[in-house]
Length: 78
Image (cartoon, rainbow, N blue to C red; front, side, top):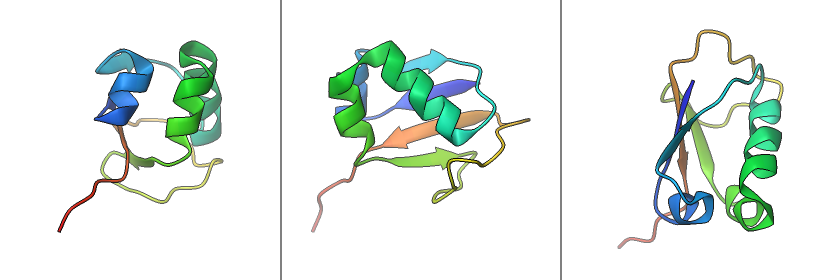
């Protein structure tokens, strides 16, 4: 599945997107941290994961059939 990174998540990952295979949200997070390191882990902890546009999914959420995941850090605005 395609995982896209935005803003600080992109900077921490060193890439705008990656292709990965994971069965759950939790497995995906572990895989991305192993691939991109501790700096990415710190950013990931503050990010929202949108799984096919849906946020707030648990770590045990099944990723079977998912087309894409977006990792978005909090944005300031006003």
